[in-house]
Length: 635
Ligand code: COA
Ligand code: AMP
Image (cartoon, rainbow, N blue to C red):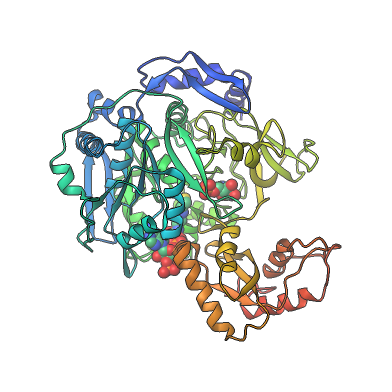
């Protein structure tokens, strides 16, 4: 632990010195006036006064430095049966031309561009094209439906949207254009232009005067050069679930982000420039932003854009095939992907058919990693399996096992120890610091390290209220847990109503808003119930308005459809039951925690404040009918 401890302690003792040294990994146009501006707490700014361009650092400088012929992006798409490799030189050409398309469409520095794309290299080209001219991208995950996209359009107010004709899911083509048109119709803000990538699997009908065809626009585009932007200028906005239906626009700046991500590639993941690094996630999530796009490219690695699933494309050996074929050194994915593989190929027979002798490490994040899955992966792969913990807000790992510094002992169930700059504390309800093995709210003493959110998009007040007001001077992660005597962290639960479905962060509040808007529903509660594959699944309990005599099964089917249409298939909302009443405290607060414990078959106590204990019998009955309560996850 010695080397790690020295580095970690130095980062807290001398943050400016530490991050100024890390900043040497980035090419700057202008050096900073101050490494960290602390004049306006709780708003902190890293590398103020400095100028750089993130796209230049991720692309052009590697071409200048001799990596022009090295693959920058490998698009491996088992779902379409195609493989495409873009070298750094080709990526530079595409990105410069796409930046030219943006400029010709009137997009200027500071303008927002929404990117609603499947897993194709053009998604990264669009992101980097924005970064090149100082426009701010906001990528929206393709599994979100029109309503969610509309909410993001209205908050970000983009001048332009980049999308594709379709995404491809196992067994079905998902046409994106109707979802995009639906979102624009719903939104109050209307983007001036849309650039649509036509894919061979489905062609989109373009709206004359508004939509441009990607290929045609690119063919006629003149390349745009990169422009210097301030280190503190936003690079992107990424929306994430909060406690309400209104998503939070996490802002990422240019300077701190580039410095932090570049630092992590060697120090946490232990890859060297030129090696292949693969994050099997989606560009719509923070993992995709940081470790499909920016991290590996800033560091001169080859990144893989994988359009497929861990199983079914074509089988549970898909990951091993990709690792062998492309000489992947490090894979990063969510535990749920490994649970899916383990379920289909428990003995690892498909794995034995591939040569993984050059593969070095597996990193898991996005949700709690159960020790069974970690130990299975460790045994089958014979390489370090590292659980690490972070969130959209931070953009990189808060806790990890920093393989490039030194490999610390792995403790299954723990994402290990805090990374440099994260001054982690565990607090009780009164804000008192807790000692080893005492469970409380996990917070980080401010200022947060570079790369973490400086604020929320156009919502400084919400930023303070959501993260900094509960314990002044500390950032609230929203997770609860404890540390052991060695300083290893254990994440046990969320303290809010965020749930994690297959590594996707969802708000039960947002699903409740959709259910509550159904004309027959009087009130409702959505809880996250344990699931052996996806970690958690949302389960809804609804109380109907007096006098509603319609068939309950029909209403439930409507509710399932409504959530799919309004939030998206990714919510995986399929469990819903009608109940007569919901359990509440005497002050009217719905007892979601108790219902969750009953559903999960965990021990629970009758809450002292419950207004009518008999209600819990009815709830238990409804949960049993759905296959929950006492019986594990029901399958
Ligand atoms: N566009 C449209 N629909 C999408 C989509 C996209 N980009 N991504 C997912 N969906 C749909 C799926 O088709 C599925 O629809 P269905 O209800 O009709 O089957 C639904 O959303 C749920 O998708 P998913 O979460 O992928 O579940 P799954 O049951 O299809 O697959 C796993 C299960 C475990 C294989 C899958 O969740 C997985 O690969 N997880 C990896 C997790 C991950 O990458 N997390 C990111 C954070 S690191
Ligand atoms: P997201 O912002 O979508 O990346 O989700 C972040 C949340 O996912 C965290 O606040 C945690 O609740 C959960 N999470 C992410 N990684 C881990 C992990 N390694 N262990 C436990 N929970 C995790």
